[in-house]
Length: 246
Image 1 (cartoon, rainbow, N blue to C red):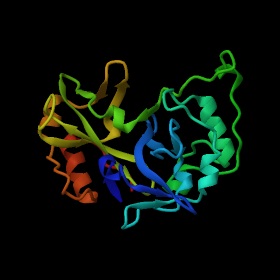
Image 2: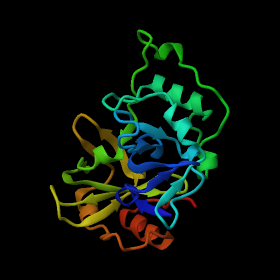
Image 3: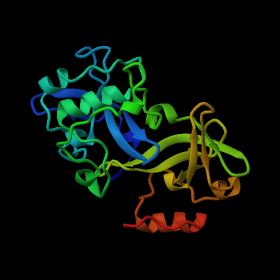
C-alpha cells in the first residue's frame, strides 16, 4: 500500500514482547530510492540513542490499529549497537548493526524478502578505512530533513519537497510530493525518483529532468486521489516518461 511518510510517522512499533515507541523518521538511499531504516522514538527508555530498524525486522505492513509488528524482542533492541543521536550514521555503525541482527547488506528485488537477505556478515573494505573510522554513507538521508528542499527543474527552480510516498510493503520511495509554491500552500504534484538527476545536499535542492512548465501543469494531487496504475499512467503520459514496470 502506498502511504505518505507523514502518515506513517507516529505509527507504533511493536516488538514481540512490548511496544517500542512511535515511528519518527525514515532513512532512505537516494541512489536506489529504498528505505533502509525506520527510526524509532523510544522516549526516555533509550534516551539519546537512535534506534534504526531494517525492514527485515518487520513482519508486515502497518495494521488497522496503526501498529507495525516486528520479529525482535525489546531486549534485542536494547542491546543493539548504540548509534549516537547527534552523529551521522557511519558505515562502521551500519556494519555493526547488520552483523548484530544477522541482516545482510542491501540486495534488491521485488518485496522486502527480495530487497534484503539474511546471513552474510559484513566486513569493512580496506580502501574505505581512514584512521580506523568509516565515513557516513553520503546516500543515506532522512526523509524528514529533506522536506523543504527546493526543486531545481531543467530551466528554473520551482517549489519544494513537501513529503514522500512510500510503499509500506516493499519500502520503495515511489514519489516525492512537491508543492509548486516557493514556500507553502501551492499546488501539490507528484514527481517520481526516476526523474531525479541529483540531490544537492549542500544546496538543499533536488535536481530533476523536467521543465518547470511540465511540473506546474502536472495533474494536481490532493492526497485523496488513489495512486493506482491508472493514476501512474496519467502522470507518466503527462511527463512523456515510461511507466513503472509492474
